[in-house]
Length: 244
Image (tube, rainbow, N blue to C red):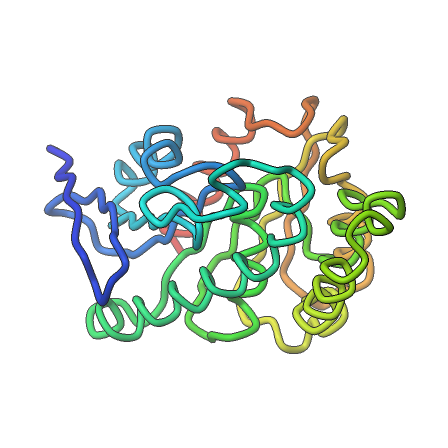
């Protein structure tokens, strides 16, 4: 069936949407740091729409069509320090988009996020109860551990004020310290065995600490990148869930 691709401006947020006439479920697909909605849709959106999803992607705050500093000049240290405000704003944008423009036809939705997009998904699960399945790809539910890994002490000494502000926000937002606030029917965490950007141990610890949550945690022979076996398994899990 033909895929329809269109863009809309919904309350100041530009959406990129892939859909078909038979699409009966909603999915938000979120890119990682320095990415944009076009790239993530090209990578994953087509496969999801073929399963019957209406797939919606937006540029994260300060990315893509919303590009602002420090992501414009790509100063890595400043970008890392500004990640949590981006995560918070983008999650709030998705929640608002769903409530105002999609909830009448789709009370619940799937959320798929890659790397920083996974952080957005994790935080989103603490501010909405509308997520059915949350799929976090090469990401971490432990914001404090992720920040400590990507922003070590030597960088914190270089930017003391910015680091203190960022750490306060990380601690306030961290889903790993308040799993009772996370709302989803199932969490799927796929990580790389050799990932040095976001180590898989963050996700492994979260699963071990929360045995009562419905969590699938799987490792792949890769670093901080998406590989075909990841995509194949995600599609298989989604197909299985749709048949229930």
